[in-house]
Image (cartoon, rainbow, N blue to C red; front, top):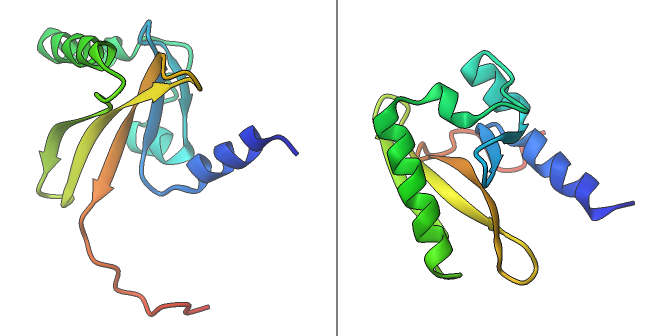
Length: 119
């Protein structure tokens, strides 16, 4: 079985939204959690259609920073206290380290309340 099937399964099973874009800002994939959160599937459309001009300028600045160095891979973009989460833009690179796109990553800070291995 191809490794890509496993990667897609990981992203699809994540409860946090994941929106993957290419360098032209076209959404190449949204996991089910992101479609549910944003109430739409933007696959094939520009992510910039969902943002104001100020946010789009920030996105462009981050992409330029990603391009400056293979070490530039993660930028904190916002905090949502109501949901106790931080949001980041993460660089996506090919095997040689060339920038190929980016994605939005949500990191929730709530402690798990369930019991370990409670089946």
